[in-house]
Image 1 (cartoon, rainbow, N blue to C red):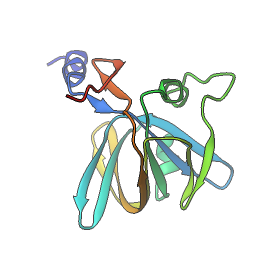
Image 2: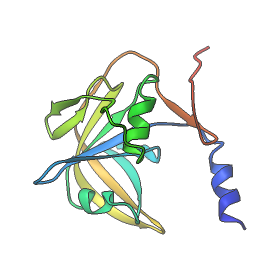
Image 3: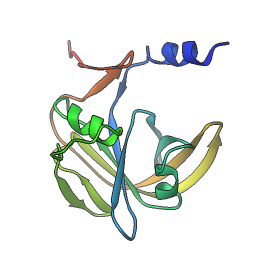
Length: 153
C-alpha cells in the first residue's frame, strides 16, 4: 500500500483545525494540529497526535497544553503555526489558567498531561481537561488538503 495514497484517503475525513499551545521556561510555543479528539467524559480526556519529527515533541513531553479550536476567519493563524510565519503576527495572545492561548478562538481546552502513547511515527498525548470555554461562531475546517467551510443545514 502506498503511504501518499493512504494520506490522501484520510483527507476525505473532514476535521476541525486547532492550535496546541504550551509554555516552557523561556516562551510560549504553538503548532497547528487537526489530529485532535475527545477520549473520555469521566474523567474528561482529550488526545492530540504529534509527529515525532516536530519540535513540539520536546515542548509537550510532560507539559500542560491548551487546545485552541479555531474560527473560520483564523486561517492565517493556522498557517502561521503550521510553519508559514508571517511578518505581522495574525493573532493575539491571551492568558489562560494553564498558559497563553489564542485570543478569539472558538473554544479553548486547557489540559494537564495524563498519559503518552506510542503511535508509530506519531506520539499520542492525552490531556486531562482542567478548564474549557466556548463561544458561538463557525469552525475552521480542513478537508482534502484545504481549508473548508462547515455548512449547517
